[in-house]
Length: 114
Length: 115
Image 1 (cartoon, rainbow over the protein chains, first blue to last red):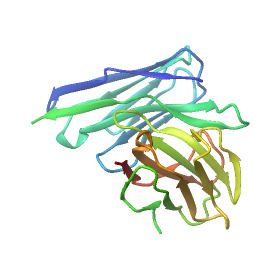
Image 2 (cartoon, rainbow over the protein chains, first blue to last red; image 1 turned 90 degrees about the vertical axis):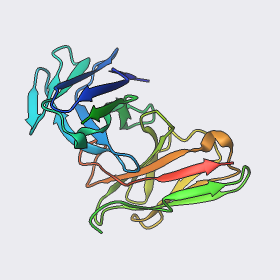
Image 3 (cartoon, helix red, strand yellow; image 1 turned 60 degrees about the vertical axis):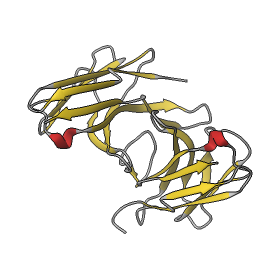
Image 4 (tube, rainbow over the protein chains, first blue to last red; image 1 turned 30 degrees about the vertical axis):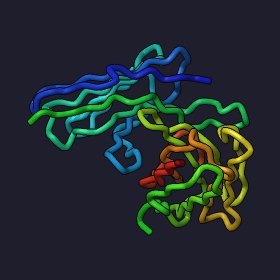
C-alpha cells in the first residue's frame, strides 16, 4: 500500500525556535493532512491541503502541498511549550477493498526545551 | 455528545481473553472508522462503517477481530482470544460522511494491554 515517510523521527528544540518537518511518499496523494496528537488523546487536525503547490497557514503553523504531490512540509514558527506532541502527516489511500482510507506516517515527536 | 467517546480508556486483558471496545460517535455522523495505533507508530486503518453497513474491513488483521454498528450509531470492536501483539491503542473516528480524512473527529482511544 501507499506509505508515508516522515522526518525527522524526533526533534528537541529551544522555546522560540522555528520547526520544520516533512513527509514524502513514493505515490501521489491528492490530499495532505497534518495532525497533532497529545499523550493519551486522539489526533487533531491542524491543516488540510487539497491542491498541488498550495501553501496554507493556521496561526503559527504553515504547511505546503508539494508540487509533485509526493511530499508535504509543516513549519511551526516561534515554538512554545504547548507545541510538544507527535505530528503526523496523512492522506487518503486506496484500501484495496473499494474505499479510500486515511493513511498516516509514523510521526515526528517534538520536544520543546523551555 | 460534543465529541467521539470511547470506553474503556484502558483495558488489561490476559492472553486468550475476549475484549469489547466501545465507540460513541458524534450524533448524526454517518461514517465511523476504527484504527489501531501500535506504540511509536501512526494509526492504521482497521474498518469503516457507513451507517450500519460495514463497507470496508480490509484492515482487520485477523478473523479474531470483529466490529459491528447494528443501529448505525454506537460501534463495538471485539477481539477474541487476545494475543500480545494486539496490545495497542484503538482509536475510533467519525465523520459526517465520506472517507479519506474529510471531517474526521477522533476519540481519545482505548489502550489495550495484553499480558
